[in-house]
Image (cartoon, rainbow, N blue to C red; front, side, top):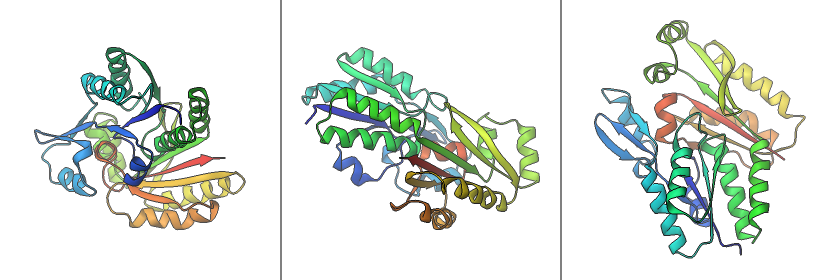
Length: 278
């Protein structure tokens, strides 16, 4: 078995059993709610959304300290690992990957830090595929090539029901936000080439279903390996999405609540559909 360890960060949305099965280390980002700092890894499912809804100000997220990365890497080497592959949220959404690179420089050793170009379950695809190859005893070069292949065959779409959090976070102008709120504008965006790009916008939830129909038609002619769905808030709408998409893929569509880092910026009612192609 290859003596390689996978590290990622807590912007990933992943089943706890997969972390245990593949011995994956998760370095936590943190979130500050009304002056109190919380480690993302310590927040339970559903807990953060209630905290955010009752907070006086929009929570603030922060990347892991450089020193935490350095300490994590050093401890892994002490456990006897020779190589670390560290896969992180895209630089366009967080400074985490740069902190990881600085931490790797401090720790020394064979550490490969990668920008996944995604986050959430789309990043999970790369992390899990790499971990599987480690258990198969594959080489460092094979694992890195597979991570790149998975990245190039992944799509991430995010649907927003409100722009309030993006406005408060300074990512959308207040004028645009007021117009969107007034007319009940819903937006679908794609995370492509490290950036979020608008795909479609319209009034009301019917916008989401119209886009979903178009997406389903597109996927019918493609070899889809897996589809996953993440949500912020309640899971009812996410399971409606799953019902429409399940016929397009043989594997079961995993539906998970996204973590505090993503929820802070998307707000309640957001969802993400992620697709990995064969």
